[in-house]
Length: 67
Image (cartoon, rainbow, N blue to C red; front, side, top):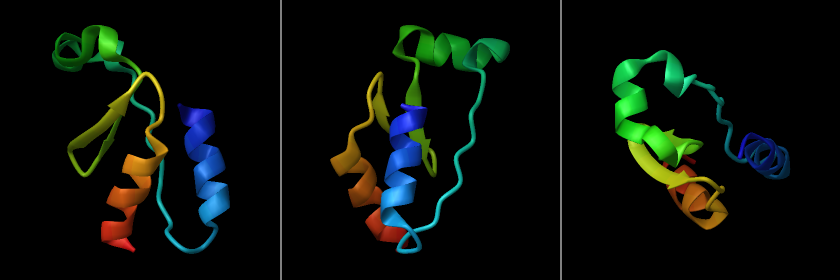
């Protein structure tokens, strides 16, 4: 998912800038309980967008709200 996000960021260029923060879910017991087998998971602004694979359409939709 990280590689797909990096490709998307490169594709969007300066249109919409975003940072990527990688969090080790297993290092936080609360996150480990919450996400368990759903890793990797992508959240933007506290909104869970996808897990396992990047839902590019959903990410573009949400980023459009910030652009």
